[in-house]
Image (cartoon, rainbow, N blue to C red; front, top):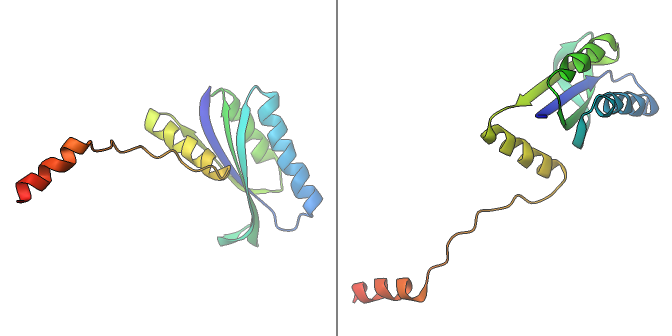
Length: 135
């Protein structure tokens, strides 16, 4: 299983119920094809940087998931078929460094604090030695 992030922009003309049904549709596609959704990030309605198909706004939604590489073609095919999707992107995280970044994004989306590396504590001996040198 590989680590993926997908973001898609829905048309602003959709009603809330239609937006929810489209989001659930794509979540179902991921889970039915053996993927596991780690978390989702609902970014809401935003202004687009430039007009896309005569729309100046769009509804942004991000899904972080794990899936087999062969499934991505099916997901992209469904994005292209759907007329309510203005734009989409699927990002693959391959290296260990990228996977660590993916995990931190998932934690951030879940509002979990990132684990910070602990500094080694100085012993009493190390603290006293610099004081002797100063004298």
